Length: 439
Image 1 (cartoon, one colour):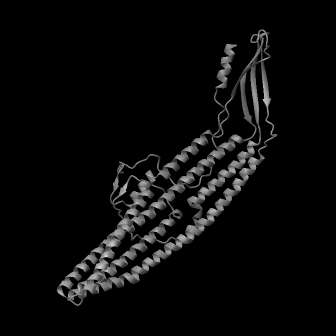
Image 2 (cartoon, rainbow, N blue to C red):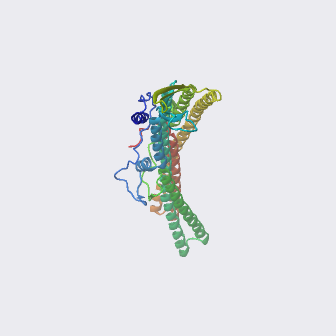
């Protein structure tokens, strides 16, 4: 009997039937993601890396490589791929062993009938194919979510970088305003000592100097906050940004609204919603397949020790769906599919409204910036040039020239604010624009 037991044990540990590869899934365009752990060779390392003259390209490169949300998204793709690899596999066979008809008194083990064999469940439906289809759809969903997360990180970095550029420019302009106020105060004091000014003029200059110093401190705080927000958008809290390098005066082209609306189906959020609906549809098919019971086969070797007769038994079992037929589970998945499709439609409507609003904001920001540069700044610069010429001729005093300089700097600050507004509005449109991914 031992050789036969060995054969049955080996058979019970044999590999399950070969599973056919999952059916191909029509994949939507997904953004290429950098490999997990990939690092640029020129990236500074260490817990306290300081970025000097950080550019937008550099900030995006750091975010694509180090942002925890992207690391998590790549891990979720790997998890979904592992689930797909397991999906649709046959259940392992069971090893069945026991004895029957063993008398209680006298020769219990010598007169018993021993059983040893294997059992295997065989599905009557296409549940294995449905499981593989669900796994493939879930992997596609994970890839679309990773692409959507990549777009979100890109949008956040664009917006934070524009704010940091603006804060740095404001810090420089406000610092220059503070220096002008200090010069005006010194000039007023000198005129007071010479008898050309009254104490009220000195008090006025002292007030302006104090206000300028306060604005300079506020501008410095704003820069620190903006640089911290940029670090958070990049996802590298151990890094410190000393300064940023870029141009607020970018050539912002206003894309056509009709073209953006036509590409709305390529938006990452809509692709994610569509992928979720695909998963829900595949789960409905799987729930219907699970309603069909599995056949249970058992093949047993029987040894009667009393008569020394060898025999075999064969059994076939079918579960009876008396208490749970699976209808409620199918109903649940169908309701989930309805909700997923409604969510896809709601997402599409919400994005269409957001697209039009972001497009209008960018259009208004560009128009305001162009109006300031074409109608206002030239006049202020002309007045500044006239004041400089009159000061050289001795027609006006230095304090009047400094006042003209202050007005010009204030308009430059207004220009920076409009540039920042335009860049932030453009950042809101980035999810609707074509993007080939990092690298």
